[in-house]
Length: 337
Image 1: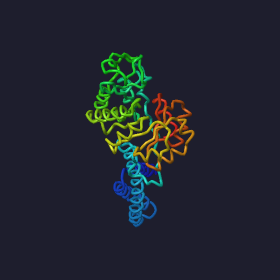
Image 2: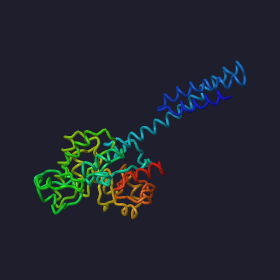
Image 3: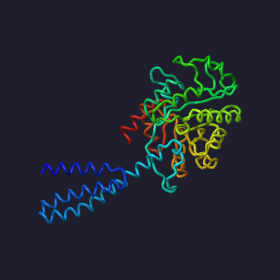
Image 4: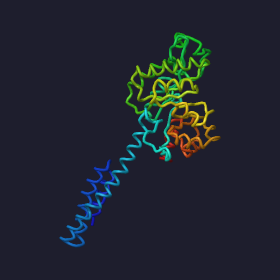
């Protein structure tokens, strides 16, 4: 009896570990054959052994095929979801039957609350990469001499980035002592890392729409030059910047931030994602489902409180941008997935 129990345990383990249909059918048939032989012999001796082997082979193959099929579907869905250039254009989804995926965490301005970090610093990006979360967000502005600088606020320490030069920006120090980084500085970090974390690049809305477009073009060129196109997605409050990025990279993931347009209105402009404040989704919860039916991604910002994190997950958003990435990821992993 102990041997039979041990055999059953091994059978379950072997069958459940099948990763595709063919593997499931083969493994299931083999396990079913052996199990049928054992049970048949116990019940009916030699003839029972033969009958049990036959029945077990057929039944085991069927069960294994089913398990392998389920595993294959799950793997394909996750692969389609995590592929950076495809995350916001869900190629395999049936439009009338949107698929819900696990909500993922994006660190707002990097993991800047970690020791030794600062907002939009190399340290905050590296610490977010170390977490292995889905993404780390940064913000970029263009200087008067066309350098793309990384900073969230329009003005930092009395200097307005879009109105000054690269040399003036480089004199500025972040709270952790780093110089204000240029985009290419953080792209070097992305190029060298083995972390699965993606870069979420926000092109800031400049006063002159043309400068927003120029910043978008320069950002895409920098990403191409760094060789991290497949690990970078884009967001902006500027529709001009979003449209420019889409024109340059038609298959890229681009999300609109302002929250003043419905998913359908954004979709008509060729943009494949919405990234709205939590209060927008509280006012328009139906926009999540609408976006998914249009095969658009849904991100929400900036969500730090546990109950808000759970609320947004339950609403069905794909991504949560947060200043508390460890807390957010822990809640999603522990209580939801």
